[in-house]
Amino acid sequence: MSSATVPMPLPTMARNRRPDASVLLALPLLVYFLIFVLAPQIVLLAMSVRGQDGVFTAANFGRALSDPMTYGVLFGTLRLGVYATLATILAGFPYALAMVSVGPRLRSAMLLLVILPLLVSAIVRTFGWLVTLGNQGPINALLLWLGWIDHPIRILFTESAVVIGLTQIELPMMVLALYTVLSRVDGSLAMASRSLGAGYWRTFVQVLLPLSVPGLIGGAALVFASAVGAFVSQTILGGGGLLYMPMYIYQQSILNQDWGFAAALAVILMITVSAIIFAGTVLARRSQGYIHG
Image 1 (tube, rainbow, N blue to C red):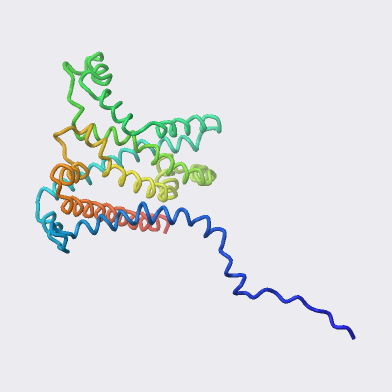
Image 2: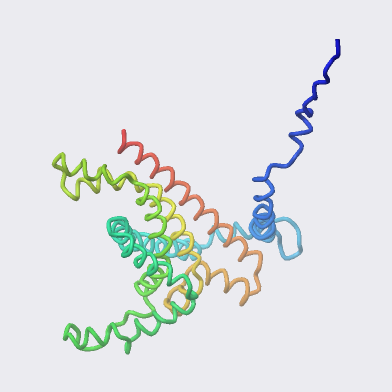
């Protein structure tokens, strides 16, 4: 009898040694994260715990946490972020709902209107608001023409001006985050709710709002983190009368050359913002489960 040779499969370990394609695709992103995100954070943390003589010290954090000015500036910065986030939600949610409710052609036009501002630098848009909100700007001119005011009102160089500018700058991120989630919602759910006697408001609160929580979380996190660190918009629209953490850090590092104290302020801001975003995410997901449950 002749015996046939059965081909032996390659060893499992030899096959597993081949790198996965997804790992190779993610490698450039990992390298970018390590060099441009993680490494600067490590350097910043090292600077915050280094004294004038180069030795390890916690004096910079002690000085920052014992100074009432730090808390005042930090609170004002966080308040600005909350205002900008709420404003983008109020403006972005109806727009995102309208986008998923209209036909394809109008939806494409509305999406284009959202994306177009992203092609213009935030600095250019901020200077546009500098002109628009000024005493001689179109807003005051319109109010004077309507007879609602007798003289130009002061809008520029106030916190309201900063919120207005940041809302317009950050609005595309909120709209895109909400639209991505709302476009996946089955339209028959809202129709079923209406057919069972629920009004528009009840359908929105009990059907659409819970399903849009992931988009709200993502959009709010992006807008809040970006708003509290918007150095250019805060400085130009706020003027010299308003002081936020980015400008405070700039003053301590560039003007006073106190790099350790500035790094400690930056670390405090970063930790505070991260904690707020994390807590907000947890609370939002728990409330989503409560609504569904």
